[in-house]
Amino acid sequence: MADKKSRLHIPQPTARPGDKPDFSYLDLSPAGAVDKPSIDSRTRDIEYLSSGLVRVLDDDHQAVGPWDPDLDSGKLQIALRWMVLNRVFDKRMWQIQRQGRISFYMEALGEEAVSVGQGMALRPGDMCFPSYRNQALYMYRGMSLVDMMCQCLSNTRDMCKGRQLPIMYHSAKANMFSISGNLATQYPHAVGWAMASAIKGEDHIAASWLGDGATAEADFHHAITFAAVYQAPVILNVVNNQWAISTFQGVAGGERRPFAARGLGLGIPGIRVDGNDFLAIYATTLWAADRARRGGGPTLIELVTYRGGAHSTSDDPTKYRPKDEWQDFPLGDPVERLKQHLISLGHWSEEQHEKLEAELTEEVTAAWKEAQQYGTMTEGPFLDPSTMFDDIYAEVPHHLESQRRRMTKVEGVNGGGSDS
Image (cartoon, rainbow, N blue to C red; front, side, top):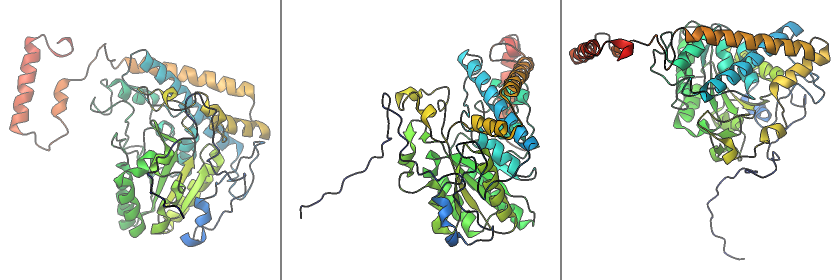
């Protein structure tokens, strides 16, 4: 037998620019084929959930199988509205960035069902630790479009007071933790919050989101270890949109086993779900939330979806993947699928959908006009620079107070504030 030498394996995507899109690596289950276990099932008895794919909507846009949440048409229309609003908002903000009116933006194109489906399955008292494509989650939980736009403008109404990158919103009122540019840091925070909720005897749970690439971060592994050991009431979501910036999801280990299986060795059940199927997302999240509230501990959910656009406004996806790859993604467009489901039920129409898009476009346009009144990158009013010394120390140290006085004095000599 010939000697064999070990070889370094470099994960590669199945298609590059100029190639025909190839999603043959995705293991897809037929809609309705995956059983729904009771919430008190042992992890060892439901390992199949981490390898199959929970799906409710079939190719004819009908809801089938045991995971069908049987939502009424009113709730489905509400969900569709939030998803369309997310898409319209993203389109407008992307255009605004391209016009040079904000410095940076990230859209959730193709991932709208994740935020809306999970947001509707959670309770208002649950704490969310989002990633940077959860715009619709903020919207659903009550944050105004104007406030989100003002944060991107870093103007006088910016909730972050100009101290954060655009799109890194937060809202204590909505129980939405600050988005962090340091990937995966929100996972340990979510687990810690959930542990505190359990200590206090509350039935509130935590939920967090990150991408497939961020599962390679140490914080991901620290978080699932603590969650497993202390049975924290938390839902840990991995949004597998196939690409971590320009790196294929296989580089993070996705070609070996599904991300949903990452917690099995620690006794955490994993569910792999169609991330473009609103009904499947809602149902699996509700299952995991009920399990957590009843003392069943954490659940790891992998949402299989696709990033329809660029990673951000500073990215060009045509450099690393086929230009038309999203159109060939086998799980389709989440907005279109929910729309067609409602049409098949007789509770929606193309005319109603066009009217909704027009209405939401007007809403977003009006919000942008209002947001600009609080200042832009080039026109006042501007944030007071002296606020950079606030919110750091309970009592501002003498050397910082000295710097503040000197800065204020220089501004006064130069004519002051926004004109300096």
